Every structure is written in structure tokens, then in C-alpha cells.
Length: 362
Image (tube, rainbow, N blue to C red; front, top):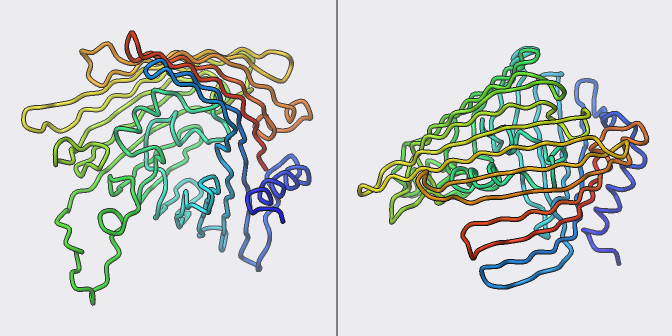
């Protein structure tokens, strides 16, 4: 009997082959209700060598296997639900309701990506430059919202032509636990606060100007008065202020012959017993079109946990090829990417990581 994950992979492959070049045609459930299904899968092979403990690892992996359901009612209101099967079962990714106030303004409420660094979740998993998002953005997320880059939020996004503005009020924890994150108590419960004494929240805002090709730029700022488990020092969950900026020439893979990206992020944590931590990260990326429907790329990143330390250094080199682009479809629809990353956190701690990843998107 075919397992559920294998069945899911086969279903995605079949959907890709049968889907037209444009997004999948919505299913009309009723006169004023439509349901759209999209998704993608990213299988990979990885080989890593870690100098700190002299270990090596070779194996097969499944980075993502996503399905996105989007229900729209009356062309203005609806909900989106994204699920990921890679943990071995279904895991919620995005889950929110939305309302189009006008043709340019949308309000969302639920679990979703708040305003943040452009190179993290706002860069769709299908349009990541290399195999993984940049080390600068990953390290920033590890000390703020976490690797999911999502939070329970109330969000307003304005799409003003070539300019997008996002403002988000959110929990600040990046979690989904009922005890500390997801406040949904009933008045008949023994405690309407569930024993938690906490009234702090977070607010974030971002702006991005430009399109997927050509010059684009922007930045974000976030203030988190609550803190979370990733900011703990001793017993204190530290709040923080965080900000960043980006400058892109060609945002999407394969979008133009030469692409360049520059970005920077910084975080200032709340002081605890006289200890005040800072972190700063910078990254530069470049890609050149090669072999018709592919590109070669290089990226350099440096991240400091405190600005007066040496910091962590990352170098990424690789290439991607899109059979989909060769067939006149979107570059991301069918793509193969190989990357090599070398990381140095100290003279003796040097890591090497090679990955070969496929991608099917429908």
C-alpha cells in the first residue's frame, strides 16, 4: 500500500503536469465562492562535514511538501490555510481570515507572517535564491520570531502599485501554545487568564518599493515588548527592537541576466542585570544567467551576536536550472538547484554543506 507521503508526492507531480502555465483555475463552489489549491514539493540530497566535532552526514530529505487552500467569498472575504506534511503528519503553516477593504487594502487576522525582513518569509519558499534562505535572515529569525517567521497577528497590508506597506500587531512569541501564545480562554474556565500575567504585545511595519525585475528596495522595523523563549536570559524573556533594510536588482530567480541583492538586519535586546545584547547581520548576493534557462550564484554573509565580536561568516556558491522556463513556464515551477555552503564561527569550527534540491510547484 502506498504511504500518505508518497501519495502526496504523486498527487503534486500529477497536478503539475496537468496544470496550465498560469495558476491553477479556481473551483467555483457556488455563485460567489471559489476555492483555489496550490502547492509545492522540495526533495533534496544533502552532505555535511562539521569541523567542530569531526562528523559527516549524507542523506535524503524532504525540505517542504506544501498545500495551500484559499477560499474566497463575494470576491472580498475569505480564508487561507497552508499545511506542510514534512514532519510526517499535517502541520499548520498559515491559517488566517482576510477581508479586502478596497482594491488596495487588505486586513488579515490569524497565524501569518508579520512585517519582517524581506529576505525571510516575504521571499516565498518557491523563490528562494539558493537552496535555503540566507544565513543573515535565518540567524535574525532565530533570535526574534523563530524559524517559522509567523505569529498570531492582526495585519493590514496596502498594495499601492509598486509600493507595498504592511503594519502588524502580533503576540510577539511566534508560537501557538494555548498557555502562553494563543489566548482563547472561556469565561467559564477556572481562570480567565489561565494563570498568565502578561499584557505586552509586538508591533511591526515594513515597506517595499519595486517589482520582481529591476530595482527594488525597502525596510522593516519591529518592537517586541513581550519577548519569547528565543530571547530568554536567565528567567527573563527580553523584549527587543529590530530593524533592517534591503536593496535588490532582480528579486526573483531567473528574472533577468544579472541580479544583485544587499541586505542588513540588526536587533537590540532589552538589558537584563546590566547585560545588553546586540546582533547585526549583513549579506550580499549575486547571480548571472547561464546555460539558457539557469543561473550561477554566489553569496556572502556575516552575522555578529554582539557587534564587538568576530562574528560568523558564511559563503554560498551554486547554480540552478529550470526545465519549466525552457518550456515557457515560470522559472519556479520546475527547478533544480545545487549549492555549497561553508561556515566559519571560529578558527576550529568550520562547516561544509552541499545540497542538491528539486522543486515542483503548481
